[in-house]
Image (cartoon, rainbow, N blue to C red):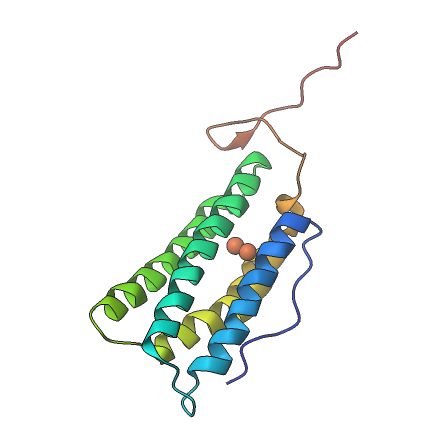
Length: 149
Ligand SMILES: [Fe+2]
Ligand SMILES: [Fe+2]
């Protein structure tokens, strides 16, 4: 299963660095937990915990930018992120119960690197930049304030 593709450049270094960290982790997951190698339990727990931490931080960063820049698909993007967080939480719960769901982990990584990154993040690149900070009320961008004299 091929899960890692060349990274998407958003033009925002913080977001790009976070993507790179998660892509590196996806490669590691692929190498350690494919069917032939298996991987051990402690490695699996460590990788899953790292994924949960990186994903939470990354989703927070992106959602803050999307909100500040009044991205029209913020709600749907948040729901996408929430679905990944739930899948990761589910893997963590299973792992705590002794069930190392290797294919579940690889499937999350595959969906994230092929679907979320290339469809959702790529589609929102314009709204992932620092410094636009569009003022909004109830999610609707307000007209820009008049220039002071
Ligand atoms: Fe992202
Ligand atoms: Fe995203």
